[in-house]
Image (cartoon, rainbow, N blue to C red; front, side, top):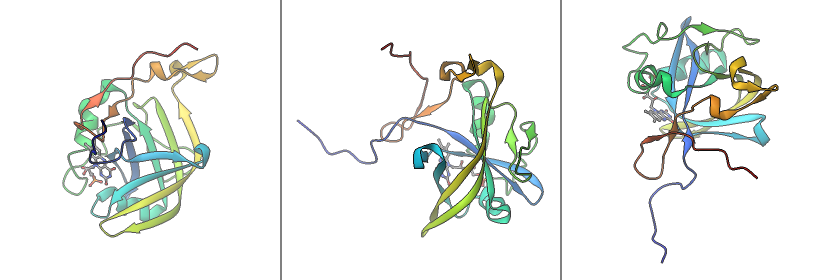
Length: 175
Ligand SMILES: Cc1cc2nc3c(=O)[nH]c(=O)nc-3n(C[C@H](O)[C@H](O)[C@H](O)COP(=O)(O)O)c2cc1C
């Protein structure tokens, strides 16, 4: 028997720390509703208009996507619970910059991407931000023969359609 459930069944999703330069300072927030599309050349995420990070995204029309490991869960939780409006998150991490000079990335995150805003879709209280991926980066120790081995990243997986808890990635399925 099938039962109707609330929500979107596309889960778990890896949570990301999205970064922007707000008034000259890096600011990061947790984004759970984020997805690659256009076969990976773009990303799409949901952003409430009240988020402080949004100020910097609109100011520069750039942002970064950083994948935290479970080792920096504490700092990640701070980014998802405190707003840059009343708490300075710029010194939580060592920020670095790539080709875009206005998209701060997090050195402590094993995976990083710098993006340019392509389109913004208005959904009243929130927006859908579409970004074009400009460049992606990985820590050398996550690469095996030049290829990313996701088991070395230990991303934080978020269940969006159930208990809203975090999960670990499981084992590789050998085919
Ligand atoms: C698991 C998790 C997922 C979240 N996903 C989103 C999201 O998709 N969009 C969003 O606008 N806020 C999301 N948030 C909330 C922001 O991360 C949070 O409000 C943050 O403190 C905003 O920071 P800022 O005001 O400095 O930008 C999420 C928080 C958590 C803990």
